Length: 158
Image (cartoon, rainbow, N blue to C red; front, side):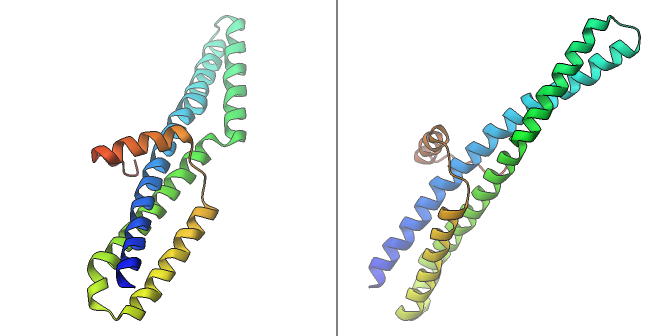
């Protein structure tokens, strides 16, 4: 029984590693999108508005309006919010992986089998809860995560 639970515990740790890495890739991707869809247009809108206010050509006001529009839409869609959600999910799965590793590699040999089983069941419930409630990763992020993990490269929260 302990060996089967230990294998299942290792599987949770491995799955959590891949999922966490995929979430960190998604967070990085959305963070970059946020920069280009919120920060850059906002800066351009402010600069264009300043130029017009200082007596520059009135057609530059269109750049200001367009920058404001892009920023408003990106903010409404929640580009930065997606980055934050994926980073949070990555941290939660990283925590779960570490918990699974400690249970399997350290505590397994120091507790009675029934207690180990109970801890594993709690860990499994937590894994299912996270999987059901957190953001879904994108295929390209999962592909990059798989490649990095197989190479021994791990992203952390940025």
